[in-house]
Image (cartoon, rainbow, N blue to C red; front, side, top):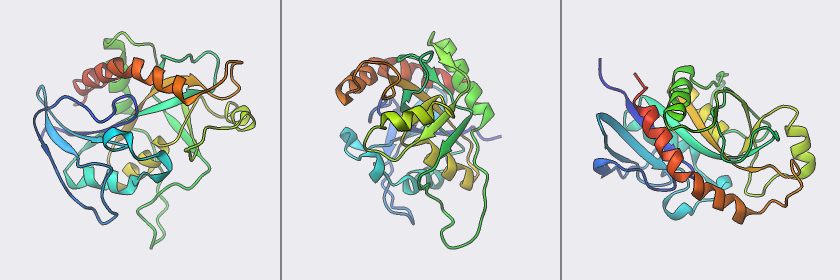
Length: 241
């Protein structure tokens, strides 16, 4: 049996860097346009990995401008068999503190979700892959991180953060809130590619605690989480069969 080719879609914590040996950038344009950046294929230990920075080099693409269809399709064209995403999120629960990692088992999104089926009626059922989720949870445990092995991710549109009223509602249905994961998970499901995500909790969502919410504070926590995020992903790679 061929070894899996794992695609990693790196979010804010991973940035545009992931250490690979003998890496090669693959410049390609999909039927849905160009991906955020040319994916890079290389080796990490014994594992072949294709790395794609979600927001492009220097984090230049805001969440509402991302071409998720091109990003996921580009990985498919490269022969990727599994996709791991990393996503920055805000906590909707006081018990889920910044610095925690969450591996969601479900998600909610009321906003526009991209699809590959614009021209015909196909009702797919999106899901998060249990095997990849377990790999991420085990990777987090190996890295000695604080991790929750399940939770509901609520996706909003961005780039703005959520209002207090929105957060008050979201906390009744979810555990973390972000702007990207549901789109990727849905598209991967449409293509039949197993997908799971590691969510870094970088802040409390607006109104969960009394402290003011600023983007500068979120970025500071993202930077602090970066090394541990990378370590978890590296450990998780070893648990993908």
